[in-house]
Image (cartoon, rainbow, N blue to C red; front, side):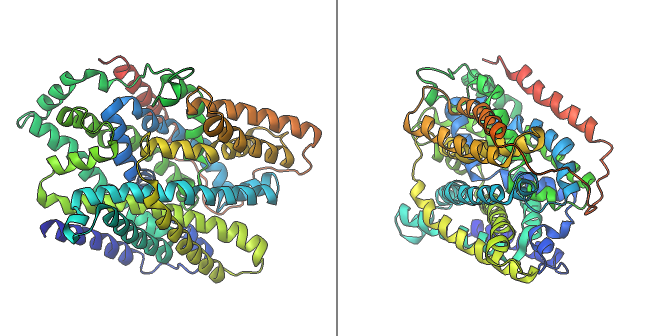
Length: 534
């Protein structure tokens, strides 16, 4: 009962405080609903970026991978800081100068309307088919395990999972539909603080217990049991037999992972929408770089607990990695804190879920509905369409989520493999738009479709003996070659240049370059200090 009370108190506080803070905001306009009125500050952007990115597929999926394979999985996190530096110094200034609302908008300016529409559809499909259902499913597993929903209600675990997915999906849809981006961003910031507090409490409590009141002694004991699990440099093969089952071979950091990180942190709509909603470039850069610092520290929450779990459980959960993190939480967390922890977990689920819904609604309303269905739609109509889109996509995600079942390679690995279908082709087109002026609209579309079919064929049909992240790198290079070849025969006919239309102040933050250098050095330090452990 105490756990449920603390859960509802914190959840209600987040909703009430955010609603009170935004009581005077106007959500009936296009910018007000989809971009938070272009009023987001650095702290809010950083908190929202963290929670949009970190959800239960990280807490459950990455801790599960760390439990079995060790700290090599941190590559997904710490290298994000480098991409956030690129976002702050290069991409954000240009996006804000152009006054964009969506990334597909840039593609229309640079290429043509059809390229924008194709990318818009692909983005919406990627949200519904990969991110939304996996986030809901992984969250439902955690809540079911920690709260024992099925046991409390006298139903089967499958029924408990369905019930949890429906409830979480419904609450998330309500936030996204009625509050728009600013409500999502504010709730993210509060939940982000809660996630940091609750998330770091799990490894600290575990190490306290292991070390009999001495956290450093507990860390020493965990390290001594399996020092190799603290090594961040993997010796897995990335090409040849066994490469398809590898988790994070070190070599992939220099091929496809670079492109993936660049896409996610500098071009992915659900991430970059916070930047587009910034009150100024200065605040956008603050938010991006603060988020970069948090990404370097976040392995303490989504990797270290998995390694500690090996100390407790040995290889008991090797075949059920998604149960490791909930089991560790139940073991070390005092009962009175359980409700608060689940509330924070719920916040992490809702953040990613809400963000994806809001981004998909923005893309559909502005990029598809207004362009092809109702060109004269006013702001009020667009907001209504956005809300309807969010509701419909939420229903799809809720219906798909329970069928994710047990992913053979782990939830996080499954998400990344599926994301590769969409991320790399779209990244190629956007990067070509910025850096390859000779690429034409026909060339861009040819490279996009080639990339989609190449990855699906080599990873899922022919199944080349190569790690899927390497395939991303090869695909990127081939996409560029296809674009340039097609553009040679069908040259570019339109002109394009980035001009400042004066939507927000684009004065650079004076500490942006210094902070960026610090993040680069910190990222390198992680690999230098932990590259040969064990």
